[in-house]
Image: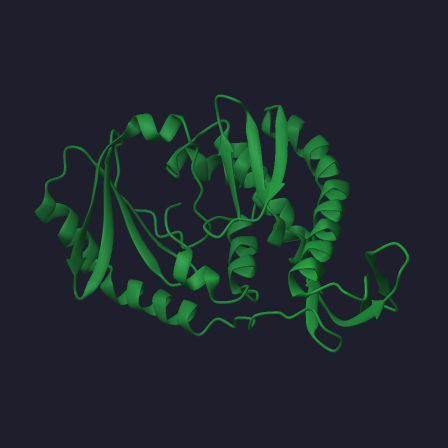
Length: 264
């Protein structure tokens, strides 16, 4: 049984072909998503931010066997859910001077400078994140400026990670893109060999970004979170669960994640 509580992502094509049924059951007062697949072993996971519980079960196991497997892990499930509940979360950002914002794992104080010149973001003295905005720019416009900057920084970092890891894993990524996602740190499309990365990763330490890129690359070889996937990850990136734990213990965005995160 797998008890990996790290990130879960899935291929939008290959895994859907393996899934036969999906439904929810309640065990010990906890809602559990049960997905039946053509797999050999049962996999149980608890996922951030709210401690969603998911079981991938072989087709041959009946409901009683699945329920018994969940019951046997209830103490662990409740412990992980408590850890996620205690995880720090940022309040809604207003993008004003004095706020804290993150880049590559470091906290910066924002300094908003109104200007009629070019808009943009720059870092000062490893302490300040200066944002130049139009005098009329509201909150949403300021947020858009910051996330354009985040995306640009990711575009600078990701190609180097891909070139380093493609020969190690033995896979080629045909395309990769960035977008803001409420449900995943990353995802991939096996048929198109395309990877999607969450723009929020620009806020996280580089080792966490590298972990997610490698995680999705391995899914191009093995779409499921099964034993083969874990074996490939272990060979390619020993100690990867520590990176997953670090990522999942960092500050989450505002409460939109907690309300919206589902699926994997």
